Amino acid sequence: MIMAPSPRQNQFIVGCWQLDDRCWLSLPVNEIQRSIDTYLAWGVNSFDTADIYGRSEKLLGHCLKGRDDCRIFTKMVFFDEIPSPQHIQYKLENSLRNLQRDYLDNVQVHWHHPELDFAPLWEKLCTYQAQGKIRQLGATNFSVPMLTKALKYAPIQTHQVQYSLIDRRVEAAMQALCLERGITILPYGSLAGGFLSNKFLKFDQQPPQEMDHGRTFHYTTMIAQHGGWPGVQSLLQIMAKIAKGYNLTISQVALQWLHHQPGVGPIITGLTTNRQQIQQNMESLDRPIAAADLQTLSDTSRQLIPQAGDVYSYERG
Image (tube, rainbow, N blue to C red; front, side):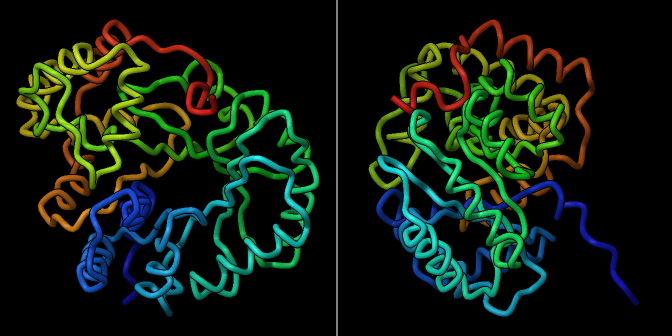
């Protein structure tokens, strides 16, 4: 008997920045394996990493060795200079080696400086794609002008951007571009590092720092750029009221709202070893929220939290 694929295969991607123990709590390999096995049991078989996420690629390669039914999205990250062909080849071969794969399912390019010419990079990646070493090409954190230009050189199929009820910069122009060109939006930061959860409902002031959690240095900065904590706390109050009516959590409401936004594909949720949290995330789309309540969330977010700039505008510096 052939089993039908789980709908969650197309609903979620497990974000594996959390395996970088320079930014997050260091987890033992056996706990990581159990966590990944839990996601697989829930039907989620897609994972997202990057060549700059410390030990993340190697751990995924170890935990998913021989699992041809799994997809791994990785990233090539470039910051301050135009890479040589040798540098690009090194990154490709290193990711293949780390992930213990013969090809990469999806390579997403992060290109930090828009003024640097990225045409040679895309041409090289297209060559690797033609050779079968890369299945799909994607981008991450590109601005509208950058993505428009990149599409002249490569068949980009996915764009990974920060997107949540707090950060909606993608809606300014990027969303329309992706819809027009058939590019799937892969949203990260969907729960703002966990700030969009019941845990932070009663915090009148900015929550204290957590040195072993990435939300302290990334998502706290993001919230500051979007008007600060008071707007987020007011949004959490409204989300809690809506969640209560459906017997959902705030995080489940946040994920369901994101799922209904135009152009959004599988939602990236950060890897956790907390099985209850995994279950709550995986079940977040099972009880539909009424369109009117989804609109209330959109309107409330827009009123409380200012949005300025293109995708990845202030992060680029």
